[in-house]
Image (cartoon, rainbow, N blue to C red):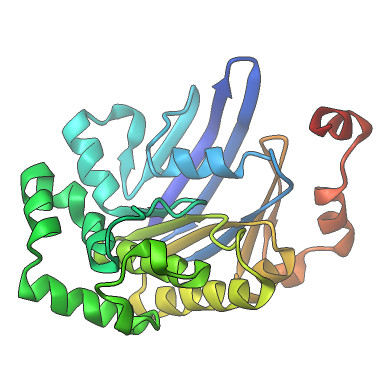
Length: 257
């Protein structure tokens, strides 16, 4: 099985802050992995490294066989089209309809002019494809509904459909269930994992919900202060390891305050 994602001693800094600190791991094609850890542990920066929105200050990040630090602008654009990201706040355009937001998923492949044309005058083929995707995520009747009129759970599903429309090899989701109640959070994570199993893409999700991570993901990677402190199947991890992962030191509590 080939590596989908590989980090070797990857480090990313913001001034004096080391957000990701000498991180090394590999994720195989088709794997489902949850990144867990307290706020500020480096999960979002890790996702931004994998989707090539950040380049490591040290070490290497290889995605789908491409070392991101070595890619030119056009090559980066091609790689990003193969890696769909669902950001924490979903990144939807409120005044556009569900179908228009989903069409934006292929903007990296189609270019500016065609994307604008498709946004205003979606083809019958795109309409049929997107209707089928919205059906898969359970909101097929919301095709022409403005996002501003959708519930939080429905917006999540539009963001998932947009990622699927991109036809990616990898889907990254950064805290995709942070703004919904526990029942909707569970449904969303269940949906993401079911779709990954059906379509075979690699799925990496950062989660605050430890129980959801343990229930749905065969592998957990735990980060603390930018370092990987645990990596394994949920059933192989000790409760003491998971407790320690989220237990703040006095210095960390003062920093949060």
